[in-house]
Length: 237
Picture 1 (cartoon, helix red, strand yellow):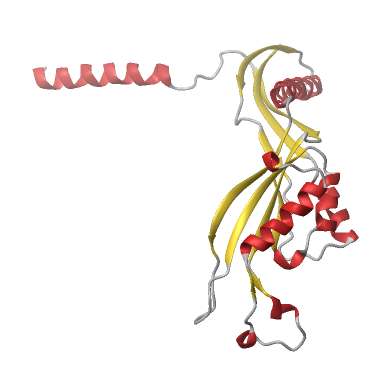
Picture 2 (picture 1 turned 180 degrees about the vertical axis):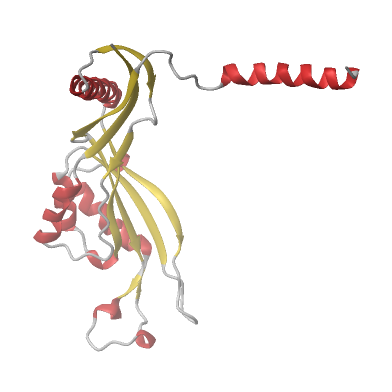
């Protein structure tokens, strides 16, 4: 044999042996593969309510006023002071109000910039949102929405959600095995496709008018949803 050809064959065999062990191996026994899922819904104990304020023209709220006639701009500082006064009156302190973003707003050609500012308000009761919506002067409010939702026991919910997903996988595998006239053995492979996904429902009101119907619409956005998935292989006997 040509020495070079022999070297090539041996090298190829070595590479093949190095690759195969790293690949996923099918078990040598009969098995069933199932996916178990679970969902946890909880009420958050920390709510971040985002309010964006923006300068505006007093003439915007006058009947028959045209944009070219706008002259009296309400300063951002005045709008912020009014907002903070309302929040303080509702028992919300400055330590619960964080400035999140400051910037110039888009302007019409040939006109002044309208400056905007955003606040992240930490709350512990959804009823406070209803109170805020009912009390603020909406003329200086550009948008209000629910931001991040948190819970102090989130890690415990993560653990329980994953356990429930595993138990759901086993229950599914058991009735499928029974349908085949077989018995379920031990779990031989467990894969978590992805970590729990936390999906807070977000309410974005844009330029809302604070009415009771707007407040009641929040009811659909007051929970945290956690979804879990587990992929498991069980031996069949």
